[in-house]
Image 1 (tube, rainbow, N blue to C red):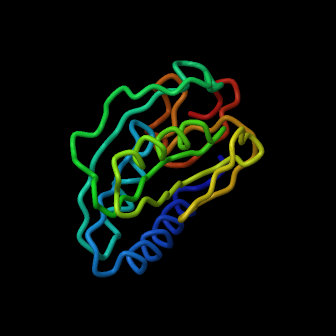
Image 2: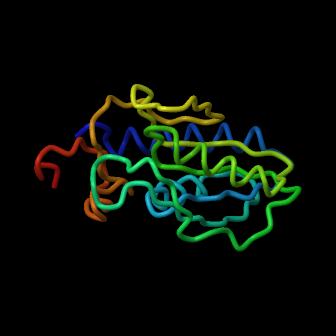
Length: 171
């Protein structure tokens, strides 16, 4: 285990407090990146002290392996218009930075009033492009992690803690 459910809960509460303060008086559109962000986003939204709307987008850069393919694809695009909206992207992990860079560029073209990023985890030693955050939970070592929405070939998302994947030992 790398991060316990208690540490996750405390960090989600901290992020929710920061976001609620920064968006006071606004009604942001939270864009969750599927599938990995769903647990984080659900927990985060329940702790926000402001009205929000949600939208979901699904991207892919991994397939079924443990290494990014480097090619990002939109599998499910946004149905909602974000033009003139305050948009907050909710992501589970920033690894190489390529997927989030692709997504932020994709969303900027839709002309939101503002665009910010909230990520639960990041691995800065893996960055292939620069990444900046507005809200960040944890900085992680360069290990493959699973749990709390993070997966390996669609497995292990249901683990309540974040674990380092080591030959099927994290169950």
